[in-house]
Image (spheres, rainbow, N blue to C red):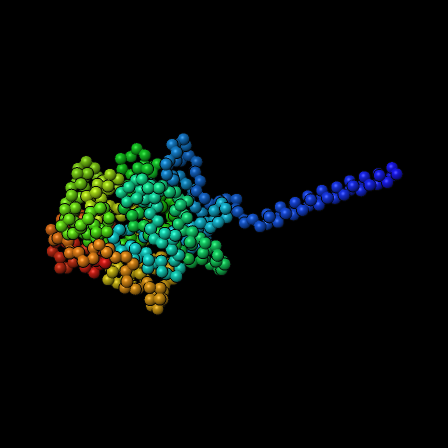
Amino acid sequence: MMETRYIQLCASMICIVLLTSLQLYIKEQTRISRTKLLPYVPNHIPTPVKEPNTTLCPQGRPKPTIDDILCMAPFTFNSSHKNPCWTSVNGKLKCLPYFQVIGMDKCGTTDLFARISRHPDVVPNIKNKETMWWSWERYGYWLWSSNARRTYLSNYIHYFNNLALRLNNISQKKGKTQLVTGDGTPMDMWDFRGWTMIPQNKGLKEPQYLTPHLIRHVNRDVKLLILLRNPVDRLYSDYYFIDNGERSKNRTTFHQAVVKAIDVLKKCQEHRSPRSCLFDFNLNAKLVKHKTRIHLGFYAVFLREWLSVFPRDQILIMRTEDYSANTKSVMKRVFDFLQLKSLKELELSKFKITTLKREYVTKHKLGKQPMLTKTRVILENLYRADTEELSRLLKDKRFLWISRDSKSGMVGNSTINQF
């Protein structure tokens, strides 16, 4: 009897051991199986991290209220993609824009960006054109308001998820993937009002670091495109475009707005440099209040900031007048600059890249009379020194906007009134 019980006890113990061993084996195999299913994540994740003590980023500095871009380590882009993209910490692909149309307002940038986006190798961003991040969203700005929702670099990166998703679904073949994406925010060229919020500018009377420095830091090789229009005509179109509460707009009210705006600008420059005035938040607000953004026409002042940071061959600068007169030729030049595959005549037509229909028309300007001659003369005199400087910077007299029939200098061009 005792012997039988002993045998039963041994058998029970053996069963327990076997069951325990089996459970441990199943658990280990499950762990191994799950591990194999996890995506490979490299040890070094190329995401922005705070750098150690440097001149720009001293230890113990106050925590900034916005992303401290210059204190982030630059991304390490994946060489298998033409567009700047990288693998994030969760294994997902993230991207920045391959190109940016940075200016200028009311010069045809909406139309230009739309035509670029119709190229078969270009994937539109989530907002389709303007992300408004570098000049507005990151500072909590919106036109003349400073009470908008503030966003961060992660939000900006999200705007280019359309491309990231496309690239994730492409089976990698030999060579680089050719798809690219872009940003089309014309305010980026001129709207530097948030410069006082950049930590490295703290305590300065004039900025040392601006948007060009920040973009160059995170996206060194981005291609920049600028479309410039006769600044006098640009202002007249912009006057009808901006909704500033003025009920009735005509060439007389425009003249009055110009006179007031010039007075505001002159008063500022009595005690400050032109650069300081043009980049000032309060001055921008006053000029909008006086119904005309006259400061946007000083192209050379803004362009100097970009040329001091980016190589000249990384910036394509064009005139709206040339773009309007020969869109096909200019678009071929744009695609060549962006190193996109050239399209045949049938493809240009198929993708509506050479269509005569414009993407956007300033409707409130349609049917309006040309500006008063006296207003044009005032504005030509105001902008002349700047356009001369612009012409010297670019080594191109076309940016003087002088016609053979003009005795006074810059003249308007009726062929681009649709912008």
